[in-house]
Length: 543
Image (cartoon, helix red, strand yellow):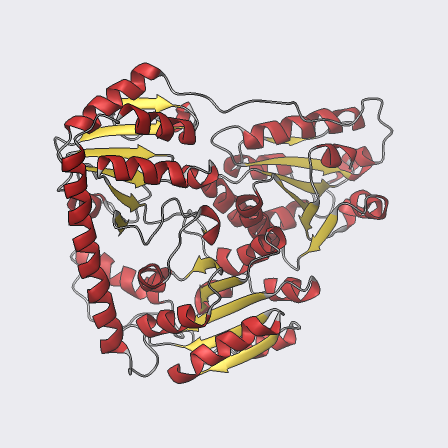
């Protein structure tokens, strides 16, 4: 507990169990540490993942023995993909029973190792402080991610002679190699049509404004990856082009007009479908900026790569491109602005065309949500098939406006909203999730009620796993499977899920909205209540 205090931990995300008794029994002695109670271990880790993103702190999680850790593995994987700094612990059975095959016993460190940066079991009380001290250090080293520490109950009850671990005072903002920046600036200056793929590290580094300055100097367009956890560029900026595809040919098609691609702070790329070829078009120059070596030139040979703090690198690139052809850059930005205006007009036409459809169309749902949400709303997103309409409707300017999950595991949105709400006390929070996704972490509603977190949960209920229907269509097309078979086991009917009833059963208000004309008023009322509230909105299924 003293080690946690020293490292600035003021929240523990957990699901209590017997082997965690020493920690739980210590909580009254440390009133500065709040225990956020969850009804499932996966929800605890999911909340902690997004808390780390929203707070900028290292999240601390306490789980329960082998089945509890097993319940959480999927969400630990998602935290790894999100590069969330996190120390995950679990109570372990008394080590004196390890040869007796005790109830709930297993090798916890081995279970967690594949989805963490470091996984270890504390073997004596004297190791607790040093091991946790090292765990916090490793969790925060770039690229950040979760670590795991198993805490046997008898070890936690031993007397220690080694004191609590304390954080080192580290200055880790590394400056880029001037030669690398000069090489990049020369290539950018020679490019006819440069583009930038903005990864989550830009948001984490607080470098959104630095990217905007570089874009406006160079006239580069900006893309996001298909999966992103943060908002690294203002989505209302004329240079914003949208999100990249989930297969190599799709990405290559989107980048076909670019002769230079600058990759900044991300894994690049997470694909869903195999297709031959590279996502980078032939002949295109590739530049990359990363805060640490592991990702640099990992998937692509680069024409110039720089290891540095992302913000420092973008600032240095902005200064180094000061002599770029301003006329050419302005012409590129003007063309991007015109293209963006045409896209906005097309989206408005799409909304109007779908406005009166029943059940409510996804474009209209997003339009109504935006109209009813406060101007400073924070969106926690797990819309999946409605994501395109969400990004074409809402505007996300800063890094703290938007949070989502990476890695493709579902259930992150409803759980993650808890973590964002714990970190962000001043701004309203809108969590938008599909009905299928939400059922993976629906217990989070109880935690929202228990801790009085004023989240507005919107469940888009199309009564199906719509993304799986799209994906089976894609599978049949890609593998040339001739089939007119139905979509097997992809409908959430017989019986239909009652989300408003589920919400009320877990202590929060629930409203079932079936008519599009009622959405705006229902959303406004939910925010005005100042309490957690769930809105189940009926939307159209796959056509």
